[in-house]
Image 1 (cartoon, rainbow, N blue to C red):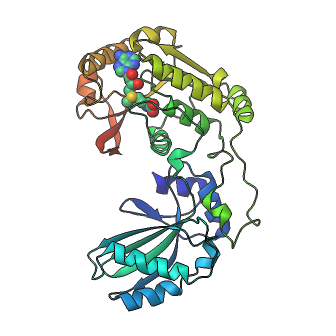
Image 2 (cartoon, rainbow, N blue to C red; image 1 turned 90 degrees about the horizontal axis):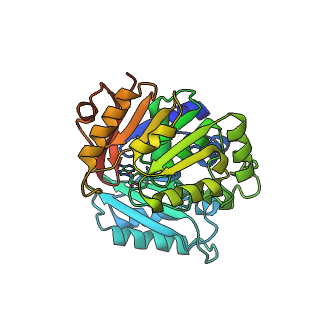
Length: 348
Ligand SMILES: C[S@@+](CC[C@H](N)C(=O)[O-])C[C@H]1O[C@@H](n2cnc3c(N)ncnc32)[C@H](O)[C@@H]1O
């Protein structure tokens, strides 16, 4: 999904790897990727790659890395992962990296995160360009148990194929993450607020990066209004609804959101015909009872209201289509906080 966004948004072909996507970019494309993509957690720049099976080679090569271009200070967080390498002691590798940083004569101040990975004796050194992980975009400040990461919500929206619908209902909305990410995607709102991204602190580019458009609640309000976007949320938890409403106000999209407290089936009465459904269903592990009943009633509702389509769910139920009693298409499977979940789309 990250590779897809990279290609669609920036025209860059990346290679999916285990847990990431590798791509080659000039500074301008890198900046666009860091400041506008919605699905990656973070983007790192590989500043060195070499083979080292002893500490002398490791130290010598680390000393030659172009730290000055990326680090404003030498108190960087250094994270090391060793995998099937002769140098297997991550603490000792980190020590060598700290020595290399100390030798740079950079001032002592907190810098960026440095990631060192050893795999089969190949050492890759990367510097974080995003800063705080993107799932802490800081735009949605209230969450509830079971809240989704914004990055995962953004990926699910890309894969869901909701099309150009102008209204969406989330019957189990929690703090509203899916709704806000849908509104942001549909109204083409900026990914980040005013917080500084790590790349903006790099000495080599500071002051020379093109200006970035930051998320602005008043702009979000007019962009969602002019497109006639409407998001309906429902949750039986009063605390969840309070969080969703507070988030909507903070994001400037309060007027585009209608959030109801109560059981989804009752709340469905105020959802207009032709509204798409997009929701993260309650997980069995989290809800002590009633999930089976909720799914059975959700199936009845969807069969009674064929206008509520497409209906797309992030869920942990292998047999969701059977439980709902309607045929569905599984679009993707992935891990959400350690739970195996699926994205399934119902159109009939
Ligand atoms: C997995 S969480 C949704 C999290 C949400 N996507 C977010 O990011 O915050 C499921 C939510 O469903 C709500 N819920 C469970 N059963 C419900 C029911 N019968 N009617 C309405 N809400 C219900 C729970 O209170 C919980 O907030």
